[in-house]
Amino acid sequence: MSGLIRSFLAPANTPETQFPLNNLPCGVFSDAEPPRCGMAIGDSILDVQALEARGLLRFGGTLQTGEWTEFMALGPDAWSRLRHDVTGLLAEGSPQEAAVRPFLRPQEGVVLHMPFRVAEYTDFYASRHHATNVGTMFRGVDNALPPNWLHMPIGYNGRASSVVVSGTDVRRPWGQVKGPDDSAPRFAPSARFDIELELGAVVGVASDHPLSVTEADAAIFGYVLLNDWSARDIQAWEYQPLGPFQAKATATSISPWIVMSEALRPFRCDTPARVVPLPDHLCDAGPMLFDIGLEAALAPAGKAETIITRTNYNEMYYSAAQQLAHHTTCGCPMRTGDLLGSGTISGPQKKNRGSLLELSWGGKEPLTLDTGEPRSFIEDGDRLTLRGAATGDGYLVGFGSCTGRVLPAVNDPYARDET
Ligand code: CA
Image (cartoon, rainbow, N blue to C red; front, top):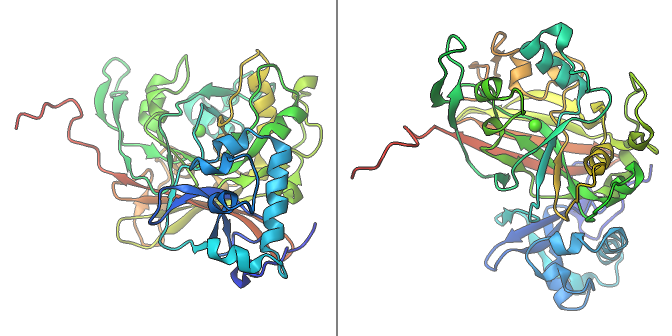
């Protein structure tokens, strides 16, 4: 594994920074000017939009649009060239240091926006630990894993319209929930609102035919942290037979920085051993997962946070490349900006579970936060924050954070305002 690539910016060379030169994640930021494309470096942002406008980078004007979508569509050669060119500009001893310095901004104080236009959003269910835990709670231990689960990565088509960037508040949803008996559902605010700690894969290269796992892997531009907010009481009532619908459609939060696949290459690892053989077209062609440490924190309103879980992306049974390949097997076209949620990332132990549903075992075993409060599900005013980083030899490749605060439900979303 290669070591830290040193920059002329000292804060980018510390072992603690999320954003050394090895990382160079892609985001969209604004200060006094409209939103524009930038890359995080140390505690700064490099304004690549301005650098391209002045001819220091050349990508056909794709960095001038205030989002990364058009650049992503250029494909892997351009992605690699951008990393190469920016690394050259920012490296220790760079002859361009004086020319580049005017295009660096402090991260502090800028507003971060959605880094790309989400074309479609698909969510998978690819952690065996998570699927086993949830299946045990919903259907009993004997039917925990559905019969198809070990043969393909199960997913459903979600909503691009409800994907929001980190920092966006989320309003507790109303929905239909099961009453004390099956015959009497109620319309009420969700009392079991939850997080799902996931990683999102961002498709860069569009396709219109079935992809191999290798082709799928090459089509993925990068990864983001993803919190798939989930109303468990709505989900438990609505999910059969067509899967989640309203329970997952309130919001899905993503981190503002896309960590490019190439930055994660040193952290590749194998998926776990197969319980049953997969069909050839879904088999890994090499290490397709990544060793990325992940955590979720919960902070009640006005109080300090508690880390409620720590897990790792290397726990997944299926990689994003396998998920994308499976997604295309029927001929489903994929677009630049397609977002694929990994599914909740749970590890083998209770402390590694990626949702409150699992951590509190359906509310039967509430957590006690460091501040003393019990929690089974999210309370109004709680702030939930996901973080993640891959750990190299003396450096990190970090994702930053993905945070959101839950606001109280409105009184009645259908009440008429008579004033
Ligand atoms: Ca999910």
